[in-house]
Image: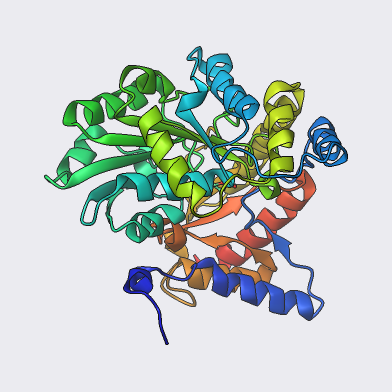
Length: 392
Ligand code: PLP
Protein backbone atom coordinates (compact mmCIF):
# COMPACT_ATOMS: atom_id res chain seq x y z
CA UNK A 1 0.00 0.00 0.00
CA UNK A 2 1.40 3.39 -1.00
CA UNK A 3 1.32 5.75 2.00
CA UNK A 4 3.71 8.67 2.33
CA UNK A 5 6.33 8.80 5.10
CA UNK A 6 4.92 12.21 5.97
CA UNK A 7 1.79 10.61 7.39
CA UNK A 8 3.64 8.08 9.55
CA UNK A 9 3.63 10.33 12.62
CA UNK A 10 0.04 11.54 12.26
CA UNK A 11 -2.17 10.09 14.97
CA UNK A 12 -5.84 9.24 14.52
CA UNK A 13 -8.00 11.47 16.69
CA UNK A 14 -8.19 10.37 20.31
CA UNK A 15 -11.84 11.34 20.33
CA UNK A 16 -12.69 8.61 17.85
CA UNK A 17 -13.07 5.76 20.32
CA UNK A 18 -15.42 7.77 22.52
CA UNK A 19 -17.35 8.93 19.46
CA UNK A 20 -17.80 5.44 18.06
CA UNK A 21 -19.00 4.17 21.45
CA UNK A 22 -21.47 7.10 21.58
CA UNK A 23 -22.79 6.11 18.17
CA UNK A 24 -23.15 2.49 19.29
CA UNK A 25 -25.16 3.55 22.35
CA UNK A 26 -27.35 5.87 20.26
CA UNK A 27 -28.02 3.00 17.83
CA UNK A 28 -29.24 0.97 20.84
CA UNK A 29 -31.72 3.73 21.64
CA UNK A 30 -29.80 5.21 24.58
CA UNK A 31 -30.28 9.00 24.95
CA UNK A 32 -26.68 10.21 24.93
CA UNK A 33 -25.95 13.84 25.84
CA UNK A 34 -22.96 15.22 24.01
CA UNK A 35 -20.79 17.80 25.72
CA UNK A 36 -18.05 16.88 23.26
CA UNK A 37 -18.87 19.40 20.56
CA UNK A 38 -16.65 22.34 19.70
CA UNK A 39 -19.30 24.54 18.16
CA UNK A 40 -21.95 27.01 19.32
CA UNK A 41 -25.44 25.55 19.64
CA UNK A 42 -27.01 28.73 18.20
CA UNK A 43 -28.21 29.04 14.61
CA UNK A 44 -26.25 31.19 12.17
CA UNK A 45 -27.76 34.73 12.41
CA UNK A 46 -30.66 35.28 10.00
CA UNK A 47 -29.09 38.23 8.15
CA UNK A 48 -26.06 36.05 7.35
CA UNK A 49 -28.26 33.29 5.90
CA UNK A 50 -30.18 35.89 3.89
CA UNK A 51 -26.94 37.17 2.35
CA UNK A 52 -26.06 33.63 1.27
CA UNK A 53 -29.50 33.13 -0.28
CA UNK A 54 -29.14 36.43 -2.13
CA UNK A 55 -25.72 35.33 -3.41
CA UNK A 56 -27.27 32.19 -4.89
CA UNK A 57 -30.15 34.17 -6.41
CA UNK A 58 -27.61 36.56 -7.94
CA UNK A 59 -25.73 33.54 -9.30
CA UNK A 60 -22.62 34.54 -7.37
CA UNK A 61 -21.49 31.01 -7.98
CA UNK A 62 -18.22 31.17 -9.91
CA UNK A 63 -14.56 31.09 -8.99
CA UNK A 64 -13.43 34.15 -7.07
CA UNK A 65 -9.96 35.53 -6.41
CA UNK A 66 -7.97 32.84 -4.54
CA UNK A 67 -7.34 34.82 -1.31
CA UNK A 68 -10.99 35.92 -1.18
CA UNK A 69 -13.18 38.62 -2.70
CA UNK A 70 -11.69 42.08 -2.05
CA UNK A 71 -14.76 43.23 -0.03
CA UNK A 72 -14.35 40.33 2.38
CA UNK A 73 -10.60 40.80 2.76
CA UNK A 74 -11.28 44.48 3.47
CA UNK A 75 -14.02 43.62 5.96
CA UNK A 76 -11.72 41.17 7.77
CA UNK A 77 -9.02 43.86 7.93
CA UNK A 78 -11.59 46.37 9.19
CA UNK A 79 -12.61 43.90 11.90
CA UNK A 80 -9.20 44.34 13.56
CA UNK A 81 -9.69 48.11 13.46
CA UNK A 82 -13.16 47.90 15.02
CA UNK A 83 -12.15 45.43 17.70
CA UNK A 84 -8.63 46.64 18.53
CA UNK A 85 -8.08 49.97 16.75
CA UNK A 86 -5.55 48.41 14.37
CA UNK A 87 -6.52 48.71 10.69
CA UNK A 88 -5.15 45.89 8.55
CA UNK A 89 -4.96 46.36 4.76
CA UNK A 90 -6.50 43.73 2.51
CA UNK A 91 -3.05 42.74 1.18
CA UNK A 92 -2.37 41.40 4.67
CA UNK A 93 -5.45 39.15 4.73
CA UNK A 94 -6.12 35.73 3.22
CA UNK A 95 -9.49 34.01 3.48
CA UNK A 96 -9.37 30.24 3.99
CA UNK A 97 -11.82 27.38 4.40
CA UNK A 98 -12.07 27.84 8.16
CA UNK A 99 -9.41 28.77 10.65
CA UNK A 100 -8.08 25.24 10.33
CA UNK A 101 -7.26 25.66 6.65
CA UNK A 102 -5.58 29.04 7.31
CA UNK A 103 -3.46 27.47 10.04
CA UNK A 104 -2.53 24.49 7.90
CA UNK A 105 -1.42 26.76 5.06
CA UNK A 106 0.41 29.08 7.44
CA UNK A 107 2.47 26.20 8.86
CA UNK A 108 3.21 24.87 5.38
CA UNK A 109 4.34 28.34 4.36
CA UNK A 110 6.58 29.06 7.36
CA UNK A 111 8.07 25.80 8.67
CA UNK A 112 11.18 24.11 7.30
CA UNK A 113 12.07 20.48 8.11
CA UNK A 114 13.41 20.22 11.65
CA UNK A 115 12.17 23.65 12.77
CA UNK A 116 10.97 23.54 16.36
CA UNK A 117 7.60 25.01 17.26
CA UNK A 118 6.73 25.88 20.86
CA UNK A 119 3.20 24.72 21.69
CA UNK A 120 1.85 25.53 25.15
CA UNK A 121 -0.26 22.67 26.51
CA UNK A 122 -3.12 22.07 26.99
CA UNK A 123 -3.31 22.82 23.26
CA UNK A 124 -5.91 22.67 20.51
CA UNK A 125 -5.45 19.15 19.25
CA UNK A 126 -4.62 19.95 15.61
CA UNK A 127 -1.52 22.07 16.30
CA UNK A 128 1.04 19.27 16.80
CA UNK A 129 -0.17 17.24 13.83
CA UNK A 130 -0.29 20.26 11.55
CA UNK A 131 3.24 21.21 12.59
CA UNK A 132 4.46 17.66 11.91
CA UNK A 133 2.74 17.61 8.51
CA UNK A 134 4.80 20.69 7.66
CA UNK A 135 7.99 18.86 8.71
CA UNK A 136 8.30 20.74 12.00
CA UNK A 137 8.95 19.40 15.49
CA UNK A 138 6.34 20.26 18.13
CA UNK A 139 7.92 21.20 21.47
CA UNK A 140 5.26 21.01 24.16
CA UNK A 141 5.43 23.34 27.16
CA UNK A 142 2.94 22.22 29.78
CA UNK A 143 1.02 24.48 32.16
CA UNK A 144 -1.20 22.88 34.80
CA UNK A 145 -4.36 24.03 36.57
CA UNK A 146 -2.30 25.54 39.43
CA UNK A 147 -1.25 28.24 36.97
CA UNK A 148 -4.64 28.43 35.27
CA UNK A 149 -3.21 26.48 32.32
CA UNK A 150 -1.14 29.51 31.22
CA UNK A 151 2.55 29.48 30.29
CA UNK A 152 5.09 32.16 31.19
CA UNK A 153 8.19 33.40 29.35
CA UNK A 154 10.37 31.58 31.91
CA UNK A 155 8.72 28.29 30.99
CA UNK A 156 9.17 28.94 27.28
CA UNK A 157 12.79 29.91 27.88
CA UNK A 158 13.57 26.44 29.20
CA UNK A 159 12.25 24.89 25.97
CA UNK A 160 14.05 27.12 23.48
CA UNK A 161 16.88 25.77 21.33
CA UNK A 162 18.72 27.21 18.36
CA UNK A 163 16.13 25.45 16.18
CA UNK A 164 13.10 27.23 17.69
CA UNK A 165 11.29 29.20 14.99
CA UNK A 166 7.67 29.57 16.04
CA UNK A 167 5.45 29.99 19.08
CA UNK A 168 1.72 29.26 18.98
CA UNK A 169 -0.47 31.25 21.35
CA UNK A 170 -4.21 30.65 21.72
CA UNK A 171 -6.33 33.01 23.78
CA UNK A 172 -9.09 32.31 24.73
CA UNK A 173 -7.92 28.73 24.75
CA UNK A 174 -9.53 25.60 23.47
CA UNK A 175 -9.64 23.39 25.62
CA UNK A 176 -9.18 25.42 28.83
CA UNK A 177 -11.08 28.67 28.18
CA UNK A 178 -8.08 30.49 29.71
CA UNK A 179 -7.63 34.10 28.63
CA UNK A 180 -4.22 35.74 29.04
CA UNK A 181 -4.34 39.11 30.81
CA UNK A 182 -2.79 42.05 29.00
CA UNK A 183 0.30 41.84 31.23
CA UNK A 184 0.70 38.08 30.73
CA UNK A 185 0.22 38.31 26.97
CA UNK A 186 2.55 41.29 26.64
CA UNK A 187 5.26 39.39 28.50
CA UNK A 188 4.92 36.42 26.12
CA UNK A 189 4.84 38.55 22.97
CA UNK A 190 7.78 40.72 24.02
CA UNK A 191 9.79 37.63 24.93
CA UNK A 192 9.17 36.04 21.51
CA UNK A 193 9.87 39.23 19.56
CA UNK A 194 13.15 39.80 21.42
CA UNK A 195 14.12 36.19 20.83
CA UNK A 196 13.39 36.50 17.09
CA UNK A 197 10.69 33.83 17.34
CA UNK A 198 7.65 34.15 15.05
CA UNK A 199 4.30 34.15 16.88
CA UNK A 200 1.12 32.69 15.48
CA UNK A 201 -1.73 33.95 17.64
CA UNK A 202 -4.93 31.91 17.29
CA UNK A 203 -7.73 34.26 18.32
CA UNK A 204 -10.70 32.38 16.92
CA UNK A 205 -12.61 32.76 20.23
CA UNK A 206 -11.72 36.45 20.70
CA UNK A 207 -15.32 37.67 20.85
CA UNK A 208 -16.24 35.08 23.47
CA UNK A 209 -14.46 36.64 26.47
CA UNK A 210 -16.50 37.21 29.62
CA UNK A 211 -16.30 40.49 31.56
CA UNK A 212 -14.44 41.54 33.62
CA UNK A 213 -11.81 39.61 31.62
CA UNK A 214 -10.66 41.40 28.48
CA UNK A 215 -9.22 40.15 25.23
CA UNK A 216 -5.65 41.07 24.35
CA UNK A 217 -4.91 40.57 20.67
CA UNK A 218 -1.54 40.14 19.00
CA UNK A 219 -2.69 42.42 16.19
CA UNK A 220 -0.97 45.44 17.79
CA UNK A 221 2.31 43.50 17.69
CA UNK A 222 1.57 42.53 14.09
CA UNK A 223 1.29 46.25 13.23
CA UNK A 224 4.73 46.87 14.77
CA UNK A 225 6.48 43.61 13.81
CA UNK A 226 4.69 42.39 10.64
CA UNK A 227 7.52 40.00 9.81
CA UNK A 228 7.24 38.21 13.13
CA UNK A 229 3.54 37.96 13.95
CA UNK A 230 0.44 36.47 12.32
CA UNK A 231 -3.08 36.47 13.72
CA UNK A 232 -5.77 33.88 13.03
CA UNK A 233 -9.48 34.54 13.31
CA UNK A 234 -12.64 33.30 11.64
CA UNK A 235 -16.39 33.07 11.56
CA UNK A 236 -16.96 29.65 13.16
CA UNK A 237 -17.14 30.43 16.84
CA UNK A 238 -18.17 34.09 17.12
CA UNK A 239 -20.87 33.97 14.45
CA UNK A 240 -22.04 30.34 14.88
CA UNK A 241 -20.84 29.54 11.35
CA UNK A 242 -18.83 26.33 11.80
CA UNK A 243 -20.26 24.65 8.72
CA UNK A 244 -19.72 27.61 6.39
CA UNK A 245 -15.95 27.17 6.59
CA UNK A 246 -14.61 30.72 6.62
CA UNK A 247 -11.44 31.76 8.42
CA UNK A 248 -8.98 34.58 7.93
CA UNK A 249 -5.33 35.16 8.62
CA UNK A 250 -3.58 38.50 9.03
CA UNK A 251 0.10 38.32 8.10
CA UNK A 252 2.83 40.11 6.16
CA UNK A 253 1.71 40.75 2.53
CA UNK A 254 4.63 38.67 1.23
CA UNK A 255 3.59 35.70 3.34
CA UNK A 256 -0.05 36.21 2.30
CA UNK A 257 1.07 36.07 -1.34
CA UNK A 258 2.92 32.80 -0.76
CA UNK A 259 -0.04 31.29 1.08
CA UNK A 260 -2.37 32.41 -1.74
CA UNK A 261 -0.07 30.84 -4.32
CA UNK A 262 -0.17 27.58 -2.36
CA UNK A 263 -3.93 27.80 -1.87
CA UNK A 264 -4.23 28.36 -5.63
CA UNK A 265 -2.84 24.86 -6.16
CA UNK A 266 -5.06 23.16 -3.59
CA UNK A 267 -8.49 24.57 -2.79
CA UNK A 268 -8.39 27.86 -4.76
CA UNK A 269 -10.95 30.28 -3.33
CA UNK A 270 -13.30 29.13 -0.61
CA UNK A 271 -17.01 28.79 -1.46
CA UNK A 272 -18.21 32.02 -3.11
CA UNK A 273 -21.55 31.92 -1.27
CA UNK A 274 -19.90 31.45 2.11
CA UNK A 275 -17.77 34.51 1.36
CA UNK A 276 -20.89 36.65 0.87
CA UNK A 277 -22.31 35.24 4.11
CA UNK A 278 -19.09 36.09 5.98
CA UNK A 279 -19.14 39.59 4.52
CA UNK A 280 -22.66 40.10 5.89
CA UNK A 281 -21.54 38.79 9.28
CA UNK A 282 -18.48 41.05 9.49
CA UNK A 283 -20.29 44.18 8.33
CA UNK A 284 -23.70 43.56 9.94
CA UNK A 285 -25.21 43.93 13.42
CA UNK A 286 -23.28 42.47 16.34
CA UNK A 287 -26.10 41.93 18.86
CA UNK A 288 -26.17 38.25 17.90
CA UNK A 289 -22.63 37.88 19.27
CA UNK A 290 -23.55 39.70 22.51
CA UNK A 291 -26.49 37.34 22.91
CA UNK A 292 -24.30 34.23 22.50
CA UNK A 293 -21.57 35.61 24.75
CA UNK A 294 -24.11 36.32 27.50
CA UNK A 295 -25.50 32.80 27.22
CA UNK A 296 -22.02 31.24 27.39
CA UNK A 297 -21.10 33.38 30.41
CA UNK A 298 -24.28 32.27 32.19
CA UNK A 299 -23.58 28.61 31.41
CA UNK A 300 -19.96 28.96 32.51
CA UNK A 301 -21.24 30.15 35.90
CA UNK A 302 -23.89 27.43 36.01
CA UNK A 303 -21.30 24.76 35.21
CA UNK A 304 -18.69 26.10 37.63
CA UNK A 305 -21.24 26.09 40.47
CA UNK A 306 -21.64 22.33 40.02
CA UNK A 307 -17.98 21.49 39.36
CA UNK A 308 -16.96 23.44 42.47
CA UNK A 309 -18.96 20.97 44.57
CA UNK A 310 -16.76 18.09 43.35
CA UNK A 311 -14.02 17.63 45.97
CA UNK A 312 -11.94 15.44 43.61
CA UNK A 313 -11.86 18.00 40.80
CA UNK A 314 -9.87 21.15 40.06
CA UNK A 315 -11.11 23.61 37.46
CA UNK A 316 -9.70 27.12 37.13
CA UNK A 317 -12.59 29.42 36.20
CA UNK A 318 -12.39 29.97 32.44
CA UNK A 319 -12.76 33.52 31.12
CA UNK A 320 -13.72 32.71 27.54
CA UNK A 321 -14.68 30.21 24.81
CA UNK A 322 -17.24 27.57 25.90
CA UNK A 323 -15.33 24.81 27.66
CA UNK A 324 -14.62 23.64 31.21
CA UNK A 325 -11.34 21.77 31.42
CA UNK A 326 -11.45 19.82 34.64
CA UNK A 327 -8.57 18.04 36.37
CA UNK A 328 -10.09 14.76 37.54
CA UNK A 329 -6.99 12.63 37.94
CA UNK A 330 -8.07 11.77 41.49
CA UNK A 331 -10.65 9.46 39.86
CA UNK A 332 -7.87 7.41 38.27
CA UNK A 333 -6.34 4.26 39.72
CA UNK A 334 -9.29 1.89 40.13
CA UNK A 335 -11.76 1.14 37.35
CA UNK A 336 -10.24 3.82 35.11
CA UNK A 337 -6.60 4.78 34.66
CA UNK A 338 -6.61 7.75 32.33
CA UNK A 339 -8.78 10.37 30.66
CA UNK A 340 -9.74 8.18 27.71
CA UNK A 341 -10.91 5.34 29.97
CA UNK A 342 -12.77 7.85 32.16
CA UNK A 343 -14.60 9.32 29.16
CA UNK A 344 -15.58 5.83 28.00
CA UNK A 345 -16.74 5.03 31.55
CA UNK A 346 -18.80 8.23 31.78
CA UNK A 347 -20.36 7.52 28.42
CA UNK A 348 -21.36 4.01 29.47
CA UNK A 349 -22.55 4.90 32.99
CA UNK A 350 -23.84 8.48 32.69
CA UNK A 351 -24.52 8.52 28.93
CA UNK A 352 -22.58 11.75 28.52
CA UNK A 353 -19.99 12.17 25.76
CA UNK A 354 -16.89 14.20 26.68
CA UNK A 355 -13.42 14.65 25.21
CA UNK A 356 -10.45 13.11 27.07
CA UNK A 357 -7.76 15.60 28.06
CA UNK A 358 -5.13 13.34 26.47
CA UNK A 359 -6.36 14.70 23.11
CA UNK A 360 -5.19 18.14 24.24
CA UNK A 361 -1.91 17.08 25.83
CA UNK A 362 -3.17 16.78 29.43
CA UNK A 363 -4.25 13.31 30.52
CA UNK A 364 -5.25 14.54 34.00
CA UNK A 365 -8.22 16.41 32.58
CA UNK A 366 -11.46 15.98 30.67
CA UNK A 367 -13.20 18.65 28.57
CA UNK A 368 -16.85 19.62 28.96
CA UNK A 369 -18.34 21.88 26.26
CA UNK A 370 -21.14 24.07 27.55
CA UNK A 371 -22.45 24.95 24.10
CA UNK A 372 -25.72 23.24 25.03
CA UNK A 373 -29.00 24.36 26.64
CA UNK A 374 -28.76 25.21 30.35
CA UNK A 375 -30.94 22.30 31.53
CA UNK A 376 -28.98 19.80 29.39
CA UNK A 377 -25.72 21.10 30.85
CA UNK A 378 -26.98 20.74 34.42
CA UNK A 379 -28.30 17.21 33.79
CA UNK A 380 -25.03 16.12 32.17
CA UNK A 381 -22.83 17.57 34.91
CA UNK A 382 -24.95 16.06 37.67
CA UNK A 383 -24.90 12.65 36.00
CA UNK A 384 -21.13 12.67 35.38
CA UNK A 385 -20.47 14.07 38.87
CA UNK A 386 -22.41 11.20 40.48
CA UNK A 387 -20.41 8.62 38.51
CA UNK A 388 -17.04 10.22 39.26
CA UNK A 389 -17.91 10.38 42.95
CA UNK A 390 -17.97 6.56 42.91
CA UNK A 391 -14.46 6.46 41.41
CA UNK A 392 -12.73 9.14 43.47
N1 PLP B 1 -8.44 27.18 16.55
C1 PLP B 1 -9.03 26.69 17.64
C2 PLP B 1 -8.41 26.94 18.95
C3 PLP B 1 -10.22 25.95 17.53
O1 PLP B 1 -10.81 25.46 18.62
C4 PLP B 1 -10.76 25.70 16.24
C5 PLP B 1 -11.96 24.86 16.08
O2 PLP B 1 -12.32 24.07 16.90
C6 PLP B 1 -10.10 26.27 15.14
C7 PLP B 1 -8.94 26.98 15.32
C8 PLP B 1 -10.59 26.08 13.73
O3 PLP B 1 -11.91 26.44 13.54
P1 PLP B 1 -12.54 26.52 12.08
O4 PLP B 1 -11.70 25.73 11.17
O5 PLP B 1 -13.92 25.99 12.23
O6 PLP B 1 -12.54 27.99 11.73
